[in-house]
Length: 527
Image (cartoon, rainbow, N blue to C red; front, side, top):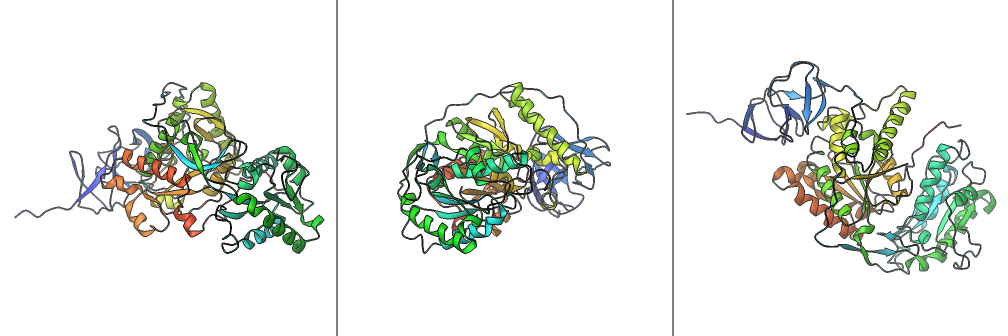
């Protein structure tokens, strides 16, 4: 009688690959099966990690997604675990091609829509918040105290208001006036003030947002209002008829307690005005989708990210906009985007950003060529190229139409890149300030992220993590490893985006997560 041998399923992502990926945790002696392949494992391989599908000589490229992700530090046998112990990444400046593989947009089968808030300036919101914006860290505690006053009990009478949110940060002073750091922070705060999900700000003339400062900061309120053109129509607010937004400084208002009391009174006046809105049918072409991956693993580039790419393409086909950010996590995959750029100029803008990041990291003795976390490595990501090739899958197959500075207002339709760090809250803060009215966030390790004022759909890359954190995850893209197609899960994500944009709460919204995730990018010296 022949003893049966345990088998374990794997996946090969491209015909040219010399590695396969373990769908489940696998043990030495098991047979890895994939298509016609039956390969005995030499050692234990964690879920999402790579297995050599054939002999790989020292110095030979490790190929995944049909692209090199590193080179072998030593000879690797077929059936051996492939990871950081036997692979290294060697950064190479590629021979880039520009606009050589520009895809055409396929017309949608039908025009889709969502139920959103049409603002007086024509923009489209998916939520309706009141914002209290602190322009300097010194006024952060006051701003948070005012926001906490308006808890669920106090807002019961205003069912169309999603909340009162304090947008605070750790900067606003000790920087060059009108310098790069100042301008970035101004763009972020101005973008939040104008955001279509901030009902008060974009109900122009109602004065429904508060700007609170200390009074001696470098990032002055007057300059912020002027620089970002935060002007109201005169005579439309019971609180102000000056034509300027409501601003107050702690020093001029008489101190902490007086400022809190005055701000609470102002918000009390504004609540019925902000509540006086109704959702209406808005074309899906007015969606601006921020895409992010955090706590990635070996399944991210196989399941959730390409499924988000399908949803991204569907939004672009509807005439909408999707944003790819995390510039430091494009490194190693940028050559794929330059080929899809609509012009050489757009592709060169992307390369200029990557060159800047190499220079900027080098100032501090660091490098962007291994921007992986310990969790990424534990999840099976071996090099930055492997991480980036999986990350850019969120961009689908659409043409790259433009590259934006951090927190610049996005006006283009189609796929765009916004320059940002890979740090999740910082990257998403920039995309939201740029105008994103929906967020999709993929995670393999289990990032429990929420984002006010924009709803964030969290997509799990594997089923075991989804089952552990089901109260935090909205969609399980791990279904793809169980037999569902990437296209099917991508359609599911697209439909979920429309439903959430129409008011369905995400898991993070149900849990009340999102007040502490506003993190503007701080760049440059602290003076």
